[in-house]
Length: 315
Image 1 (tube, rainbow, N blue to C red):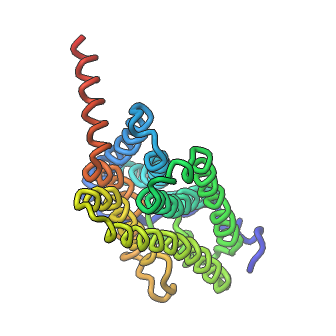
Image 2 (image 1 turned 60 degrees about the vertical axis):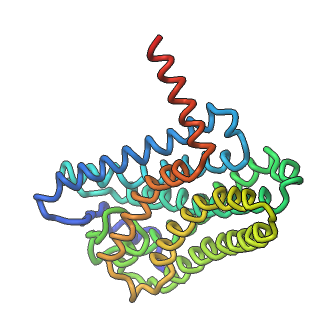
Image 3 (image 1 turned 90 degrees about the vertical axis):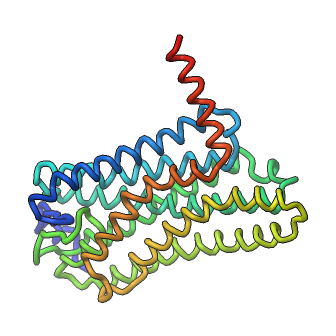
């Protein structure tokens, strides 16, 4: 692996983006801007709703507010730069900017990964051990679990970014992507990237499989508990409580596994970009919509907030 000094051979990178077609730049700018605004407003709206409504001051919604915060942050790490590229045509990103973008994206993506696992554990405790729920998932436990997600979210990018930018980039500074994603950066290196690919695979596999083991184990016990319920209403409530989380988990982990847990020889940059658009921009927009549509408590809180707003505006 090359020394850090070799990495200074490139001072800036050029993001080739999704397309160079001039007639598509403005339509794509409009689409990405709308999606980003919906994502930011949806996630910040979810956080605000949870803060204002005392009925949502439970562990489930505490974790959901953290998920919304992370979704908003990691979408904001990528999307504004993409929008600026469409609008101005300036797709250059400085070396340090690329390092920062990669680092913070992996921070929030890793935290997202483990928050989904923590939320599965929370649902397991609520459905399988309802009588002990308040003593098991206490406010201090919620805070500790959330902090753990963020701390691990800092460890992973520190390793991945350090390994990636210790490489020598002497072939080209053209990134075949719309942001500084690790596989796209590794493709530019003239160093031996075997160790980097191994490190990337191990960390991604640990993140995904450890979190998935927690999620699948939690939902296995939840399923067993639901099947043992005699009340049809109880089963329906348990399913509705878990449905939104399961949907988010399926979408998120499906794209992550496709993106990172395959050998570099299997990577098609065009396909990778389409998948990346989905999990960096679309998923953060979908999460608050999914939780709003399938969650009665969130819907009720939204109705109450809307009524209060109407009263305030009418006075």
